[in-house]
Image (cartoon, rainbow, N blue to C red):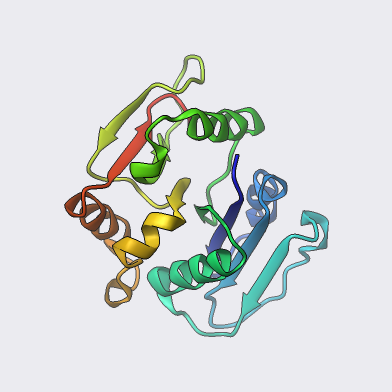
Amino acid sequence: MEKVFGVVILYNPASDVIQNIRSYAKKLSKLYIFDNSDAVVPLDLKELGSNIVYTADGINKGIAERLNQAAAQAMAEEGDWLLTMDQDSFFDEQALDIYFSCITSSKEKEQVAMFGLEYEQKTGALNCESEETSFLITSGSLVNLELFKKIGGFDERLFIDEVDSEYCLRANINGYKTVKFKNIF
């Protein structure tokens, strides 16, 4: 897979957040962790690897601004994709490998603004069966950073709610696709 960066935005995280982050951190070129908590409680992130960039400034800047910050940093480091995660989201290692493989082999990836997946576990084999959709949630999605520049990023006026659906809408209006893999969770 091309150069994949990631971002997870924390807000008063529970102790299991490290385990969730561990499920994908080592598969990324770099992972940006933004802590939006008002009272910052330092996390021991050393075990996650040297590719972690942790930012905690005691200010809740919402989702959109932090996603845009991560995208800007990833693009400055020549990233191709940005994996956007919620603090309570995680991957099974096999699912993440298949997800990346599906994107790598996608014939239309240059026209896909965002790839996403199912967020609830289902039974059945993991595979690349996909469908074009008008809406994806940001958690677990991969944002095409080349198209991100053309679409214009996430709308910071929205702060948290509807950030993902508004971005997908603008992507579609601009002629780009949003694609969900139906059998990756």
